[in-house]
Image 1 (tube, helix red, strand yellow):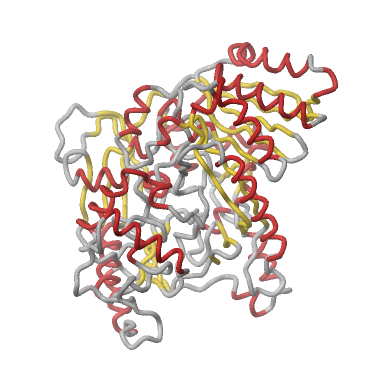
Image 2: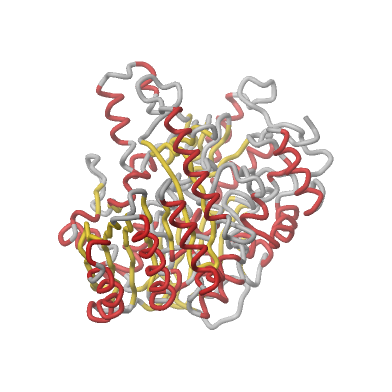
Length: 598
């Protein structure tokens, strides 16, 4: 750990309270080769407790270390662009690493849990043997939190059941019941949407990327395409089943373990316990979902500046409401990519909303060119995640798990394929408050966006800010652990750069470190421009910089002291560790040694 990180951690402890581990807690966790590392007999005992579901983790990348040019290696590297293949390999993660930050490395053992009792056995074994514990569901983590070398992994992939309820009442609470869905921690959103929407005719607020794990998104306070209509995934949580550090299987809801329940709603995954199941409210399904796609090229810097200003005004006046979400991207080369999603609007309504903006572009003469003509379409909401419908009617929008015998339901968005197995060069994000759209601040925002987008692509994720959202969605989000900045943000601005699957030191598949660092420098410089107009910048924990210094303030703000108290109550010895998670300031960055007790 760098000196500045130690100083930052010390400051956090001073502000938010001192060490909450017991005096008898071990100063360091054990690693393979240490005298205290469990014996083969002890591991065999755990294997028996979990019904034989203990795995000695072997990386398929070993084929590349042995023979990097052989077909077996090429097959592995090719499959790293298939998120379903990655999800089914406990040694792999959806992100292969981040330059100068982390590299995906497998755990020593994994419990392929199928029940909460399996998870409890793994938790007890890790606690009693002083092991580093890591939890992995979908395996999506830009920050590397679903991987840890020398660890025991709780792998929830097989816990993927989906059960719909007409009238769910949380344990210990009084009625009336409400429509809901209970989902195993290892399920992914594409399968859940297919069960809830395609087959069940309901809507559940989940994530945009269909292969993200359900539990991780909920615990991180995640967003989906229609967040301004339905709120955050965390705000939809009604109950969670969770195994805490003492090995107890608990129910957490508004009536039972309510402090833990609040912390699980956006306080970060893998921090307060191992969640095995979540129950989320469902909503009436609208008749229509739709989209608007277009790409506009500006022929000069002055024209690009006018385009940014006009689009921001259009967004503030006509799109910052519950009907709209998704992304507009400003790119180097003076380009604006529009990929917006709508709900409850038909083609004619959408065309009427967009007509003045598109007419302004068309009438601007040679200043602008539509390099992708506007496409405005709506369709039955029930088909939004229907695998067979999508493959038949919009085949370019999805890809299919191509492994022999794979389920036909294993589809993923073509727009997300670059993220499968990617190696991150640089990544930054900041919430943009709606106040920046006002007349006295709009010019400064437009200038900052122009400067930033000349260096790197700037994505404006409008669904990841709740300004303009339904009052019910705002109220539900206000009662979560997520940073309060989401309530007033009109978008989350993301600037990033990535490369294909890469592993430092793997012959033939090592990243170009020089190029990655140059990209990272451009990303960081671009974000400086945006942060210069953003007061008290904060960010979304799941999509943020690995190098964020003031992470506790950036991710949770004034809610952090309360989160730390919950951590103290349910995990006093810090069994559950996530770098830059609640309570992690008491540990070195790898989670193996307590700060102050080295």
